[in-house]
Length: 138
Image (tube, one colour):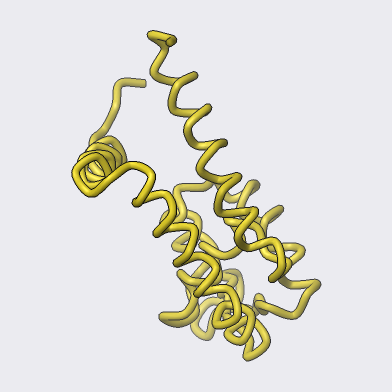
């Protein structure tokens, strides 16, 4: 067991991501792509707002968006009020892909929760939310 928070969190994140990626594999989506598409269900978002919502820098976000654009799952267009702004919109094909993937994601979620148990699942979720919301020293 390591005392390094960073290493322990990265190892756990890789393991959990693998569980979700395996579940989503038949849909052709990766966990990061699925998360982005779900965020866009509520409506178009500017690239900056989407990056903030996903806790990603814009360069990483743009690399993640590229295959979704090529696959016809999203479109990126100039903003209605500011032509420099780029809005990301979910396409009908993207909505259909999310619908096809939802039950697979839910199954992975249930399996992880079951393996941890109710109490540990709640504790982990609470701790992760605390870590995500707090400003950590840089």
